[in-house]
Image: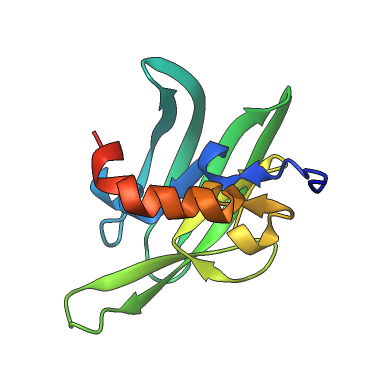
Length: 147
């Protein structure tokens, strides 16, 4: 008899903000304040939008998020932290999770707020939900499965 499924929330299905996207779009240039909008797409359909303001001045860097969630307007700040690169080329940016205070490079929208993955209860990556035999088949056929 199989076990009862818990139907976990998958990280791949959640909205996420990652620092690489912000950097690629010019939000993390040194000593600037920049605002804009991020959009999440599924195919050609916009599934979500968020207004962001990034203050990258080194005294008190933060990102301010403004969006609607289930009809409620949400507006709050998330602290940013920068450390010098070990290669001596610029700085590396991190979010400071408002719930766990962990440094991270990706925030996931969980229950209306963008948080570190450890703050998201009962969430899993899709690959963690696969059975042992499915993982075996995927590892054998992975070169044929990729487009």
